Length: 138
Image (cartoon, rainbow, N blue to C red; front, top):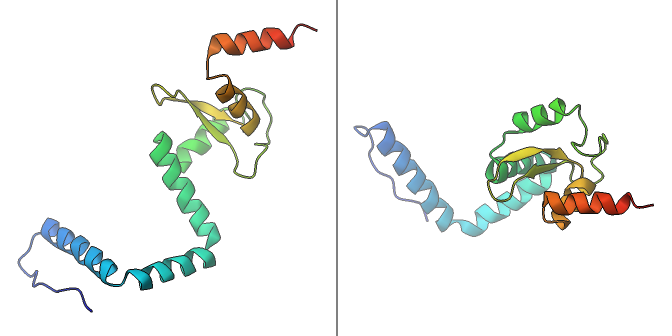
């Protein structure tokens, strides 16, 4: 089944865009299984493009950062973790964006180990100081 077509010769750009979006949604809904099969096949055939697209989407959605801003933050830290100064992120998924969970403000880039340690201590500076004191006992 085909999506309906409309004469848009006198339409504004906004009307054309709105119509095109509605047309695409209708077309997708009418051919959902075909579209899903195509998307699965494309994703399987293009894993590098998907990884790059997903990274870009997640950085923007979760932290308001572009990949270029992320790279600039990491470069400003000398290409290493903001806490332990390692130049290896310690995980297959790479570096972590450290941010304040209350305000959402990005503090910097951390390796997986430092990010996990901070998270397990609730990002509480007093608790982190107590932990540092504890490990200084011996």
